[in-house]
Image 1: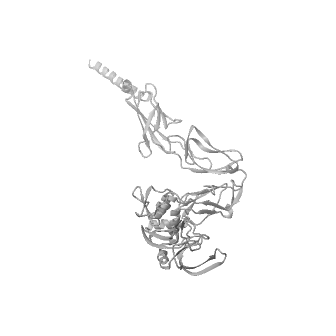
Image 2: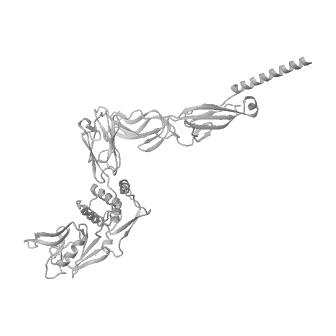
Image 3: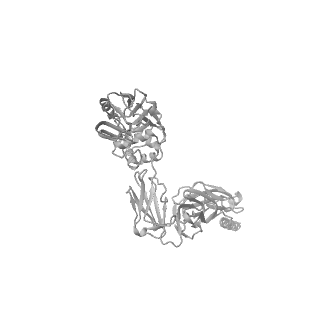
Length: 527
């Protein structure tokens, strides 16, 4: 009896070993999920029949950071843009059916390390025959491309991108910036400049922006040559803050710094003899390339003149905060003015002065205020906002230097009795009888800025009868229109037309008026 029990026990143990072996074999032989490459998604997960159901997909970066994904019909799609050439770990978990789980285990996991695809431009310098289309080749296929920042999603991945340009005439050479991505869920590559040149030209040049185009003060200038440039370096004139950078063996660029190129000025790049090249757009060999530089906006010019007290107006930013007192912030504001509101600085402003104001447009009031600013800073008082003017405006805005002399306006009435009135900082400071021009040499009606301001001088010219006059030692002169000026001149009486176009005042009145009529002061003559 005991022997039979031993035999049965031995048989039971054998069956246990067989069952364990069968279970172990089932774990390996039972259908398992697979992770496969995908032509569109990150990967494709294949779950065979009877393998169970997909329980989860986890994607990790090389540093272990989870990547959000979604699964659709087995395709695994990243929910955020991924880089190119990025290594990722994909882990797939499948839950087996209950009966299969008893045999082969309840779960099965599979992992795969994948590298996201990448694509780059095959060549940055192209030589294209006249009349041929220009196309950029990639070392793979691209689904998304950007040409000069304009993004295109291609219907199908492409190894070649036609630019839609025929190499002929002014398009015989050119340059574009290209970025690409192999998949729509990837970030675009860093843009690279691709240039094309005519076949058969030993050395040609493409500049971006093209010479003659208006250049932003902080805009990079890039020069690409059809052949390697070696160690030769171009020179920038006038010298500006910034630096040259070698992009590749064909390309150099200049990156402006600080406030960049001179606002409203021009820039020249002088090529050394070894780099003189053909500009395909013109067919000429060039040594010097030129660009005009964009000027600041009229609106910002007015804002600064108001802030610095050269206009009879205040300006306040809509946000309550004016641009920062830095060159970079002032440059940005000059190119893109902040929103704000102008208000008259004084309650009592002559209507003749009010009618001259127009925010955002160059007008006589702004022109005259700019002349005043220029004269104060020792600049030619032409009322033109050139590079030196903007530089001085920025410097005063940053330092908080304001005009402390106030704002004046002169009104001359030709209605007898003729008179002159000076308005200064909201009130009348001088009122005097005066003489204007006789009918044969009238004082021209209108509004004019004072352009010359001298305490004494010689006035000469031709009388209506053809004789000449020469009057030395004339006092307190302010020229405002051609040879017409406000000045002192002795007459037996004042208040009627007696001059040859000037506004004559008694000496005491002229002396009082003169300090209020510096260069840029507006004089209105009314009939």
